[in-house]
Each structure stands twice: as structure tokens, then as C-alpha cells.
Image (cartoon, rainbow, N blue to C red; front, side, top):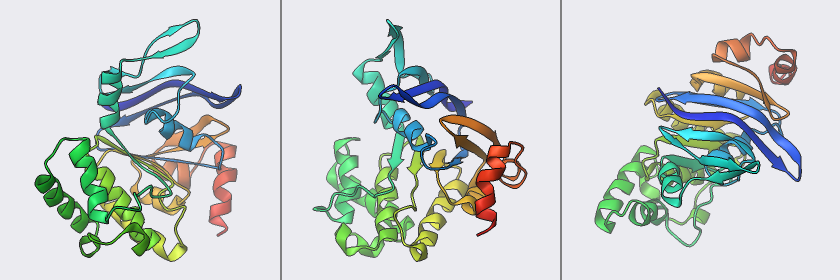
Length: 254
């Protein structure tokens, strides 16, 4: 059963369509990886699902809840705040630029969402936060501040903070793009572990070899549309569409 369904999604910026009728499904325990050139609409899909952007047409379904209630005079009418909050709590977003609170320690960054979003008491939240940080290999950085950490450590802390709210679906938008090459591996290792644990994830990335290793399915996007989708060995190793072949050719030369 699909836990996420994007239905004919259209998104415009100043009358320019950046998403042109995108439809996709994500099954529970699946890792869907979206690849494509910059500006193809990959990140915009994630932002629409996480309610960071308003959609112009189509719908988004998480479990049994639809984001758009109806259309009036061609404009989307969103569901009530309660339903939207319920949907949003099932989504956890990891951004490319970490988005950690600089004035809080790493432990506080992970603890605060549990206290203010999930309503846990401080003692309970800190206990769980320390367990998550240990899984991320950051147990010795609990009292440090983001500025004291490397980029790879900051991104792992960002993933820990997102996991703390127990999202049903974990979204990652270019999680390694802001990292130095030597730091990428440590973040990819953590994400690979999450995939092996069968966490439901949607990941936008330019790391093609990594996508091949962890993806249950791969989607290739171009110009706001899904050009090709399927198993990683199909889309990455044996693409059928010329546009996919052209895009992947640059990575084979590297």
C-alpha cells in the first residue's frame, strides 16, 4: 500500500510551470531516489509535499489524507489546519544546508522537536536524543554547537533531529551537496543504514552510484516531468529514453 501518492502535480512560479503533471507513489519501506539536472523540478516536489510551497493543481495523499480539499474557480483549497498538521507530522525533511539552530547544542537541536512537537518531557526527550545521536556516531558531540562540527557531522545531526519526530516518510534534498568531497562518505553511510532498516525515504541526489546502491526505485526528471522510472539497474544501467542516456553519460565519463 502506498503511504505517499502525488497526483498530477502542477506548480508554477510567475506563470512558468516547474512541475508539469507529476505523478508518483511511494510504498512503505521503499527508498525512492529522484535524479535529474538542476532545475528539473526535483526539489520542488519535496517542498510541495512538505507544505513549503503551495501547489497550483493536482493533489498529494499521505496515507488516507488528501492535502487539497477541493478546487474553487480553478484554485486549490487546502484542507483544515488539523489535517495539514497531521500530514506534516508524518513527513521529516533533511535540507542540504543543515538548518540547525546555531545557538543550541547538538543535543538541544535534537531534543527541542520532541518537546515542542511531540509533547515529550525533557528527561524522556534527552534520553531518546542521546540514543539517536549514538546511532549517528555523534554521542561525543552532544554538548557541542553546530559551528564546532564538520559539515558531515552537521548533516548527521540534521538527520538525527529529523528522526527524533518519528516521521513516517523521510525526505532528503541533496543531503551531500553542501559537503566537501571527503565528508560525503560519512553521510552516505548513515543514509545507507536507514535504507537497510527499511525506512520509507524519498531522496533527491546527484550521487548516481549511491542512488544505484540504495534505491528501491529511481525516477529521472527533466524539465518538470518524469521521463523515466524503474529499478536502479533499469534506469541507471540500461535507460530506455535518450534524455536519460544523455544525462547519465556525464557520470560514466567521470
